[in-house]
Length: 257
Figure (cartoon, rainbow, N blue to C red):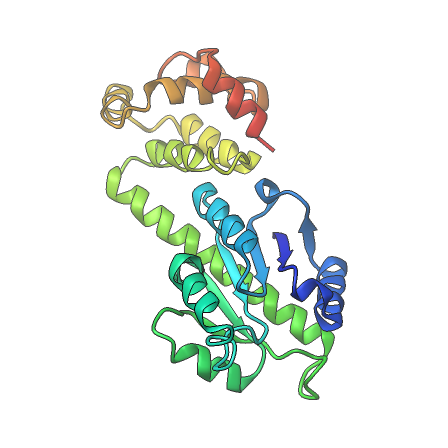
């Protein structure tokens, strides 16, 4: 799993956060660009850049996990009072509402976060720097587990939404590929799965074409098949509709990784 790590400006100056970032960079697959990530981790709150990045992740279809690191506490929610009230109203609540997971680093923090009506899915991952109960390996493993859970839940929810649109497996996979377009990253296995479905040759071509048309996927499907002819060796005889070079095909080829 590829992780994009973002630390708020205030937390980036804290030594313990620096040590955590170093451990994550060493023991997990941390990437520089958001588009290359499967999950975004945001450490620290009360930062507009974090809010903007969370919004980008949501628009791109990338789940994100928030680690408040003590920033959401009785004192921090009120000091400075007016500034916190404005921040909470305009973006802080939205970050937590859209977060796929929230990590507390102490039992007390978890209890406090869980009582906030605008915060959900709180998990406890003890910080080895402040707890004798865990090691550095335990902390990193705990964070990775939360990230995997966030990704799995996100993918299940997406698959369920797609399944409501169509029962056809080929069309479902086309919609899965289309869902990755805002992400600007389409893993090659998405195409390989579609390739396998098309080569199974156990579908009614007329019914499939009707379903593709009903879902308004014709142009997109033609572009996908064009890219697959180069990426997976899909031949014309197994394409339910002809491949077509167009601007969508150029984007799909660019995003396929």
